[in-house]
Length: 70
Image (cartoon, one colour):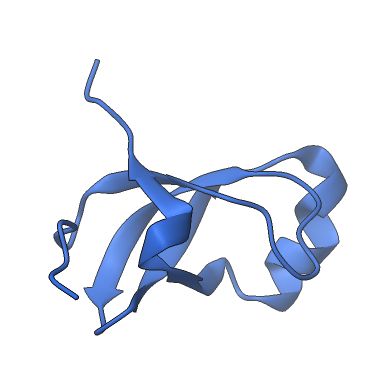
């Protein structure tokens, strides 16, 4: 699978696992079918889970969308 994501891009990611809401982050590393994302913006209800993840998660590429620069 060819990745359309590059390091440093801002992305919106679907909720999964312990996270109850979608979140926004930046791509730190791209793998074959996933990417490591540093969480920048998240719902307050997910504060504990984000802390447990040390503000980084692995997200499937198909669950991410680029956030357009404004």
